[in-house]
Amino acid sequence: MTSSLTLPYYRDASPLRSLLPTTAEIENAGTAIPSIRDPRYGGRFVIVKGRYVVKYGGHHIAENEGHVLLYIEKNLSIPAPRLHAIYYEEGKWYIVMDLMPGKS
Image 1 (cartoon, helix red, strand yellow):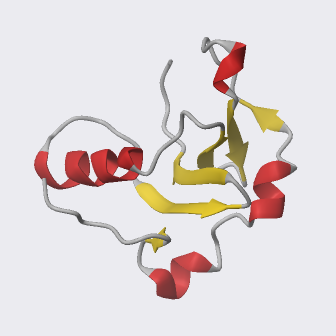
Image 2 (cartoon, rainbow, N blue to C red):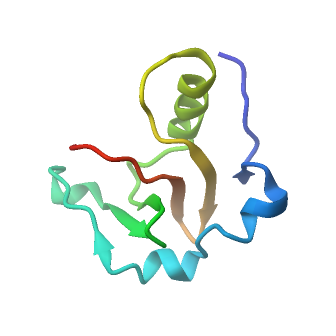
């Protein structure tokens, strides 16, 4: 697979970027998505602005997840959240995706 993103990555930076949640909005999000992961995982899933799911934190989150989401979008016909941004800040990865209906 060829590298399709450069970090930090922001989709269509012009109009959308101002609508993306800030790091402060992510960190202070009140709506966390329950996880079945081991608590040692250290990551968190939150809903921000009622539109985005952000996966952030922990050392188990990696930039490879961004590559996978872009690959799925371009090459497969399966439901997957659309990647809007991925960046690394103050020792944490942040992956900003569409909020999709369904169960996890």
